[in-house]
Amino acid sequence: MTLDANMTRRAFVATATSVAAGMGLALSGCSSEATSAPSSEEAGNRVESAAGGVASDSAPASSAQETGVDGVVTEVVERDAMGSPDACDVRVGLIMGPPSMGLTQLITAADAGVTTNHFTFEFNDVDYVGLSAKFNQGDYDIVTLPSNIGPILYNNQELKNRYQVIAVNNLGVLYCLTTDPSIASLADLAGRRVYSYGEGGTPEYTIEALLKKDGLDGQFNLEFKSTPFEILNLLQQEENCVAILPQPFVSLSKLMVDPLYVPIDITDEWNAAFSDTGSQAVTTTTIVNRAFAEGHEQAVLEYLQLNCSSVAWSLDNMEDAAALQEELGTFMNNDVALDAMPHISMVCLTGEAMKRALSGFLEELYAANPDSIGGAVPEADFYYMPPLGSIDDDSVGADRAHS
Image (cartoon, rainbow, N blue to C red; front, side, top):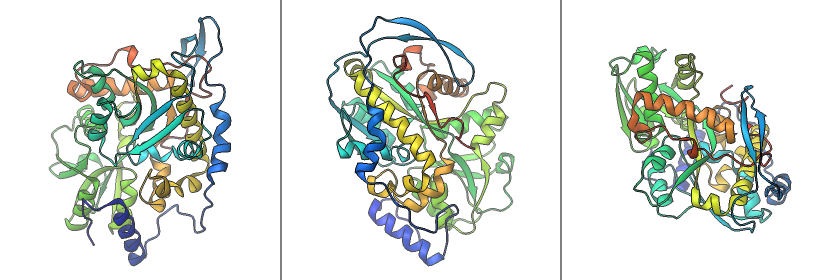
C-alpha cells in the first residue's frame, strides 16, 4: 500500500494503523499495555504551580553573574518584566512533529483554563513556509520554526515585524535510512540519489554544512520532495532507495517499509565532524514577535516556564506523553510518537543555554552557505534573555538529548 501525499491526517492515521496490523509489525519501544493519559485537570495541576512567580517583583535593575551548565560564567541582569502585567491572549502557531511533541502538558493546561494567560494553539501540519508567512502577517505571537528560519526573518529588513528567538526545542533529529543493506557510512552514498525533505530549512543546510566539513560536498545528488510522505512512497517502490529524514518520520518509515535499515545518525556525524568547535546541531526553535514580547513579557515568561515544565514531564513520562499526541494534534499517531520520542532530541533551552547552542550552529551554517540564515549571523539582540530567576532551568533535557 502506498501513501497519498495529499491525504488528510485522519485518513493517514487509519491507513498507518491498518498497515501495521496487516504486516504484523510491532514498533520497538512500544508498551504492550495501554498507557493511562492524564486528564486535563491532572495536567493542569502539574503545570499550574509553574505559572506562578512569572512576573518579576518591583526592584531596581542590577547586574549578577550566572554559571551555566557548561561552566561558562555570563553577566545577567535582574529587571522587571517589560510591558503590561495584565493577562492577555497569546496566539501560538505550531508545526506538527518534534517541536510540538513535548508540549502536551502546556496545551492541556491551556485548554483546561489553568494558565494565567489565554493561550490558543493552531497547527500548520509540517508547512513551516506557510507558518512563517502567517507569522509575518501578524496571525501569531509565538511560533515554532526550523532553526534557520528565525535568522532569515531577523535579517530581512523588509518584513513588517521584528523577531527574537526564545527557546530551542529540538537538537539533531536527522537520520539516513535505506532499503540497501550495503550502506554503512556517508562515504557509501557517493554517486547515489538521496531523497530528503526540508528544502530551504534546517535539514537542507545541516546536510550541506556537514558534507562541506567532511569534504563530501557534491558527492551525491540530494533531491528534495515536498512532503515526507512522498519519500515514504519512494522507499516502498524503488529498489535500494536512500533517504535522509527527520524523526518521527523515521519511525513511521519502519512501520511502512520492510526491510529498512537506518545505518547513519546525522547528529552523530555532525558531532564528530565539528568536535573541534563543539557545535551542536539544532533543528527547531521558538520565535516571538518582538513587539509582543516587549508589550507582554509576563506572557512570554509563562509560556517558556510551562514549555520547559512540559518538556521535563514528557522526558520522564514518554508513554503518557505519546498517548496524547493524536488527541492534541501534536503528531498523527501515538505508537509512532512513542517509538520516535527517545530520538527527537527534545529539549527546552532558554537564555544563555539557548544562545550558546544556537549561535554555534548558525555560525557553521553561515560558513557553509551565508544564504542559509539570511546572509548574516544574527546580532546579540536576536536572542531573548529573560529576567534573572524568571525561568527555573535554562537547559531542560540537554543532558538527555540524543543519548
